[in-house]
Image 1 (spheres, rainbow, N blue to C red):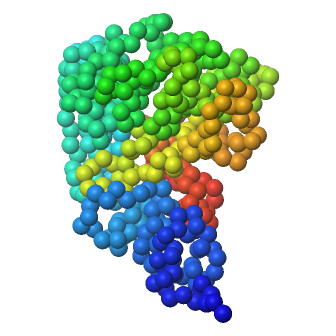
Image 2 (image 1 turned 60 degrees about the vertical axis):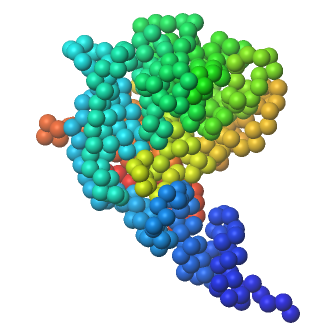
Image 3 (image 1 turned 135 degrees about the vertical axis):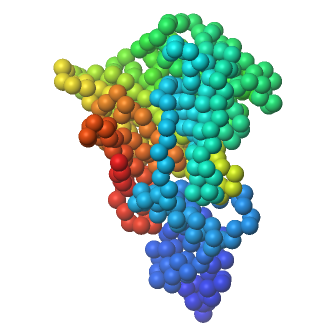
Length: 445
């Protein structure tokens, strides 16, 4: 008679389990007591479980640390997030100038060289880290020679991209990897009150210009070669409007839009696919319906937000020596929708969905109806939605990996403005391990 698997020596079981993917390991945890105890008592398997539960992967940048040391470090970090009891707290004196950007442990903001509201320079601050004991470090570029409309940065690539007053995109000075530090674009429509969204994804730089409720233009370049890759206009065939966009992967992005029938959608595009018409218009590969609006409900605003650069963002910041980074498949997209029912005050809700849910089974098709996924077939099962505080400042979200930090409430106490923050974690593997509720929520002031 062949021996039963649960009678194998622990060393053999550990070797077998270590060849499995993380989902199978989680299934084995629930199979029987022997499998559960074997995985629980193995440092290498427990390390893999904790990495998955945290939604991160090992960067292998610090070979001096052993598996037990990395496991202890990871558990300390996760315990801090679970209780919002951090090892250090710092009060930062930071000017409230716009624009601003937070990427990992680097905070940047526009600075002025005169009493005018025009931004000519940028101030940077590397936040302190308890992981390696690094202190606050600040530096400035007071005058960068252009009037800055907006900017994006990727500290991992030592890259800053600026939108100049003349609607050009400047790749922060003369970056050694950029063939041309200035990327020109000539929008079809411009107004003094234009809104901008600029994003960086590895070698790609995207810029969305929004002129009004219906006029919008999206440009994507390879910033290293200067080659334009994508041009998408709200008046393109089948495109009613473009409210916002976010990168999903190194070849896909998602836009939010509202159809002429006032039904909101998320549209996924492949910007590296060859367009059969030879134009720069990206290939639309999937349309996801959002919850239907009733006849008397009017959608006012739709915004998508994600990690600054989903494929490269580091959970433990961009500080040298960081051991972990977020797993691309676990990244979260937050979709903010403002709406009004008849003459009632405006309301706001936020929908959360993993990037991987929007990138499943993206088979090219030429039929627009085949691309459309009704809300009932994907939304209730793959998203979470909640009503939130409606405030001009409450749209600000900080999304990293599967976690989202957002303002929860505002109050004036003793002449001091107090904001309560709420942290939500949508990591499904952490829920399987701990048997928690679908959303982990923590609050702090």
